Image (cartoon, rainbow, N blue to C red; front, side, top):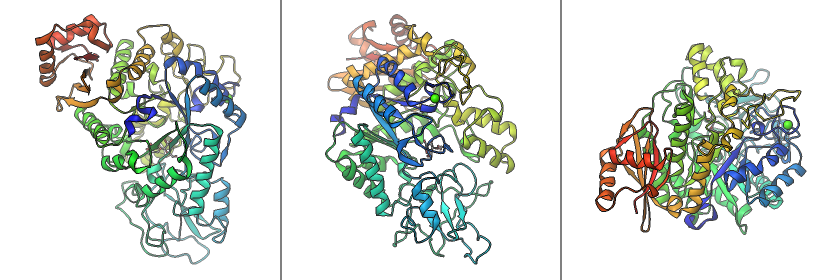
Length: 597
Ligand code: TEU
Ligand code: CA
């Protein structure tokens, strides 16, 4: 049962190594830097650290393009540094999970070099190769097998003259998709995973694991191989269609995941597996995470972080969002748990913008602090495993860039050119889209203090950070917040502690209140005789506590007066919180947990 698992009350912290702490002044964060900050993480109280990729990589996609799984990129350090990080983390009671990127490798991986060399190499089928659509007649290349576009721009097909074929890449050209239909390839992946587990890591976050099984024909070839037509959707305005309907949650996903469970995790204890799972429905997520099916412990689902994007231009076309849509997505996740699975809880990661800028209010220092706490409380009071992305615990904001050349992320840069060239967006619209949604928003250097490089590296370092530090480091930084009992940092510490000490927070049933309300997000958590009421005003205006929630408060008041000592946590002082409950009028971004019984 998921509820008996060691991680059922754990909190995970994601470190993006490039941007966390630089130890040697080359402008890039590294393993020794992370090790030097482990005591900070222990102080915050997290149980697990997830490291984004630190393996050898040409860094086309900041390490999500791996050329050697069994070594550390020199930019980040050495295997000895990794061993030291693990030892120190374990000493502090922190587990460490690594990123597992096995939907694709780098095109510079030895497997791919062998595969591209010839159709008869022993790695020939380790990747997904297709003949040109019109047939290859020699000399010139034929047309791409279909109109699928890469998520990072351009066609999802790349021509290789040596084979007279195209290879498939859902992400960049330098990230060819592996062919999971090939059992030798799978064995090699499992053996690499075992090598890391034996070295002492505590599990994996699995990159786009929902994409490893694609639609195949009865011969195990990507549907359409050798002349028959690949599925082709109508193209969007930029000339491409999305591979997603045919390439996520394919027919063999369950089989591959159970095989992995047996080959890598059988007989091991105390580990954690979390799969990144775009394109997975609630029902499928329940199946994959239900312990009786022996697949994965939990998944990241993306419905809730898609509620503010719509229509042409996808994620760059930011629109208004509705609180009822957010509630609806979380309800879906909670039902996965009701039905025997488990879920993860997140607002931020290295691909998402900062939540305080996105759905909170960073227009003044007071509103930023209040809304960061409110959104933190809203997320962390759900049932599931919360993930904190570095700097979220400080209420770090989006980047303050205004020019395209300040961004480094290949997705933002490629999609700028693709969508502006195709006149889907004007320059101004696309720059606004990147400022709101671009991945570099979360990748600016961690703000440790107010010095020149925010303590990410020393102020006299010869090389500046790889990505510009946000000027608001002057007011938003760890040093200042650790000294302030009312900081966002102090509040996150309490959120984590509450999950560790209060079984209702960890395991209680979740029930939405006032499901149609677009301003106040309220719910109860019930475990045995204990009942918590959570209320959050998700707006910068005052709000009236809606009817159903009001009625619950009235029931409590019929028995006893509202009691300050029953406020388990709030972003006001307890006297104010109780007064707000009494009057039914919430201040902007008020967030509180009241213990009803
Ligand atoms: O992301 C995959 C994914 O589905 C996205 O979140 C994607 O980055 C986003 O939709 C782009 O708009 C994972 C990693 O988290 C990401 O950093 C990698 O770039 C990607 O896979 C490829 O490995
Ligand atoms: Ca460094």
